[in-house]
Length: 279
Image (cartoon, rainbow, N blue to C red):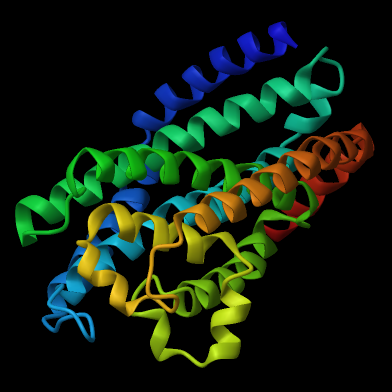
């Protein structure tokens, strides 16, 4: 296990360096931040029942969504693409290959997520008087909600990536439910404006709790009036995100190992032949 962690950390560092040299991939992540800033700048009203600017709620919600998206959209796409290119087949012959691979991907996604979060919050604060953590307690809450949120979505994203069919269908299969959760999880407007059944469904998934936890870190206490329970419910935030983290870890490694076992030279050759015919 120690060797797997060491190999995973080394591989993660290499992949992160490659990412920083890939302008196309970096621009995609930065575009998400720009969209969030434009949406926040367009809104001028206050959160209903409070004097908190709605733009601050939007920034906090998009901060959660960026973490969620990188874990549940970007990571599965990476895994499916690399599986199609034969990465999992090569891992079958490497001792501890799957755990090391998962560690590397987790490190890569965590680094990207934290960088995008910092970029969004710093840009919003400098350009649009955006929200900042409310004192030392706010910074602490920001740290643990971000950590637990990533632990909740990154392993889950790896598990999803292990079962998706191919890169061409992966984005279509993932984006529709992710956009649905963005709309129904209170990330871009107060959850209380939605019907109660929609609120109950959204509360099952991690994005709702990630957004709520980040709002508690970034918005003043008066903004709690816009929450369905009238409070931040931080113990419930921690409980739900921890439950999703445990579920993700229980699913990710077995599913990746299963995907690796199903890989073979003949499957890889057939996929390459089909790709050549389509190109």
